[in-house]
Image (cartoon, rainbow, N blue to C red):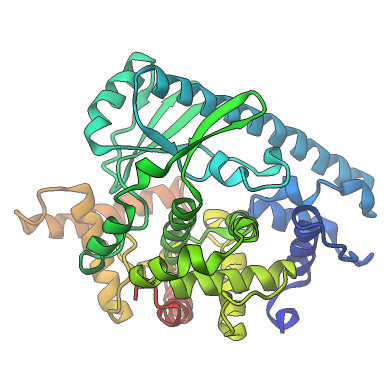
Length: 399
């Protein structure tokens, strides 16, 4: 059935990853277009692990050199990223700040070789009461704050360092479910652990909290631009490392409303990488396949489909909460939530909604003209949003 849904390039890429990450022995067809597979891997942010065994495959020498260059570039970026994580650790320890890495090296910890997990920025979380102090510390170190007014994080940059400091957990549900999730998360900082990777030291969550953070993070991006194969690999490697997944996760995730999603995501991993079926995995193969296809079609944060972020405007609001409105009503709610997020006084002065409906679309049109944003195919986005909305409703996030 996977052959019906996945393209040849997607299937090949999954096999390449399975061979490296899970020590499978998939035979790679000789007639495969490795140029297309490479482009697919690039948009999924998995070039490094996918082509780690590049010499085992019959790849054109020119393309092979291109992939080698990409791997060397990624190796350099990953090494820098590790040094940035280590720099953050030393800074937080020096000033007695409780912190914890989210994703990044925390996910790489579960890989067979830590340096093959491609990295982005440095994501970490601190306690709300330490925000002002951390801001002062980073400012003294020469970092510039972006003042993004984001719902759960702030960004700081210095030279080639990019720190994303979280003051809240990404992917929190709507208010009626939030209290339950926060109750589960209350001991997060008590359960962190210090790990040592070669010459580096970091603080990461324990297994349960790391799994929960990944689920909350991926479901949020799933509803929006997508999260791609890199994060699916993270989840697949993680569940393989847990001895009794149901015992660790089932009760708490059922209480939160993420057990169905965790079960489906695990089944999607099983299909993608040919992993053995386990009892905690969903038996709804059709829905798991559709979820896998949706993940692959989106790519790493939408890299494979520049219309997904527009599609999501008909699916979920600006804070990526799970909603059940009809799509035209949801589109209006999404624009309104964006205005509220950018202009804090909107609810007090409703006239600002009117100005927002003029200002933000006009700003987007200007960015499209300057080629800073992809052109909007509104009719296509509306049409594609129907299937996505139906899929996410079946997954029953936070229900």
